[in-house]
Every structure is written in structure tokens, then in C-alpha cells.
Amino acid sequence: MWEQPEPGDIVWCRVPNRPRDVPGPKPRPALVVCVTEYKDGITVQVAYGTSQKTDRPVAGEFVIRKIENKAAYAMAGLSYDTKFNLLNIVELPWNESFFAIPPEPHHGQTPKLGSLHIGMRKAFEAAARVVKKLKLAGRNQEDMKTLQYS
Image (cartoon, rainbow, N blue to C red; front, top):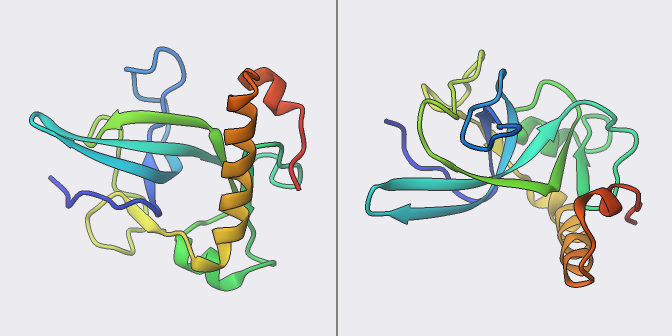
């Protein structure tokens, strides 16, 4: 098995839809936000990443774009501009069912694509603040999708 990831790592993940215990059909980037060690294994909380609609982030999302921050893009190990949705965080077991070695592994035979660059900290924190405010206000995920963050 692979070395456990760290918060801030970007990994190749089969993010599940519904039900949450079934791996998604294809791997995609996911941002590790928390790692927890239990007696029976490791779980990883990840934020879903997508290359779709990167020109229109909504509340709780941030985007890593090659043209805006080449260093962050390169460090992330991404192939396309990618937005991460902090509203869509799931906890998954750190295993081969949910994580895979990417097609072009830059970190050896591990699911790690790269890491979140320090230059993305403000964007990440802005998205996290919005999520926290909306959750405290009792807003559901559908309400949150309609709000833009700044």
C-alpha cells in the first residue's frame, strides 16, 4: 500500500456520487483536506476536483489555472485547469478502490498528483470561509451553488 497522503496533496481519486460507499466511474483530481488514522486503516477527506466550468466558480470553490499561476499549476500536477469544490468533501478509505495511480505518475507509484502551492492559500481560504459561513447560516448545498464568492 502507498504512503499516506497529507492535507494539501492532490490525489487521483474515484470520487463517489451516490451512494458514497461506491467508487466513482473514473478517477479525477481531488484535494486532500484531512487525514485520519483509525485502528482499521486510514481515511481521507477530499474535495472533488473538475475541469468543467472553471470559468464560473461558485461559492465554496476555487480554481487552479495554468495561465494565472504557472507555479501552482505545475506543483499541483494537473493536466487541465481545475476547480475544487469545498462543498463536496467526502471521507473515503485510503485504498485501491477509491484511489489510483495517475496515468503519468510524477511521484512514483502512488495516487499523488502534486500539492497545493502556497500561492493558492488565499483562494483556498476564501472558499473555506464561504463554506463555513453558509453552513453556520444553515444553507443547503443547492442554495450555496447559486452564490458567487469573491
